[in-house]
Length: 344
Ligand code: ATP
Ligand code: FE
Ligand code: MG
Image 1 (cartoon, rainbow, N blue to C red):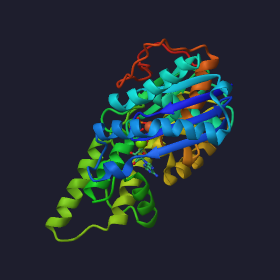
Image 2: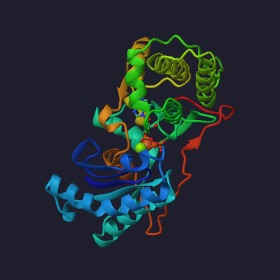
Image 3: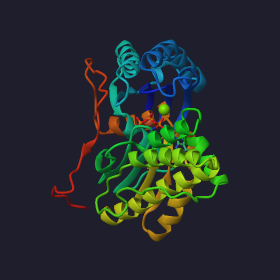
């Protein structure tokens, strides 16, 4: 099976060709970060325009790099949600057009299915699996009793962790997105400022990160009033320590509640060095669980992950009609803690 895959949900236009869900034959990514940076976040209209300019160029490049033609393709997969509606529409329209013109099946993919399925580029996933999906828009535990079954068992009540990195970075005067910079600063600094760890001792697997951003703002404000400037590296280290404390504590709880053969770390924040190290350490207490972090270079948005997810969906018979539309608010099913649930 050879799948042509599209990703255009936010500020990365990407096209990839993936073989059997596990081998990247080509991967093209055009990032728009520079165009959005001066606004401190993604401007939807700007994003759509960049996607339109790039997408056909990237399809040609993906076929050329893989040394393939449309005749070699088995199916076309595309992220149809969640994300910015105008941005998603560019990928969906391109995928539909190519699938229609070349009589190929069209396979719809949810963006987080993509992030999680990128773990397949490391090794085949053994189920049941549990994923910590951490990105700019999501912070959730996704339980997969079996392949192609996704259930959210814990979620953030406000900000996503990546969003929290970006907002804290902004108050510190760092460029958007700030995750990578703060991660590097944190490794140089010492965690000597006290910051809150919301919901850490709560039994549920939910998160709350919005208080952390406010606490950082207060800390800065108070320091300025006293004329004692904060050390930026130490602030980054304190912020990251609070985030990791919460993520690691919740992961331990999640693995106890949902024993899994595989634990996947996915999403843009999966690139975080401190988080990868912390989880590697934590997973030593779970000898029957295999830790599979998505490779750092595939943790952010890309179409290869959509190809991996598309291959799974394709094998499970998932197909779209020609009226497939962008769904900006699409999410996995949330499994309520009160609901009856059997762990196999
Ligand atoms: P979603 O996947 O929820 O739709 P998104 O696609 O916008 O959101 P991603 O592109 O998956 O998000 O991830 C981007 C986020 O990851 C940004 O918030 C960025 O700051 C964060 N990030 C990237 N690298 C790191 C890092 N090393 N440490 C912490 N955060 C990071
Ligand atoms: Fe993403
Ligand atoms: Mg992104």
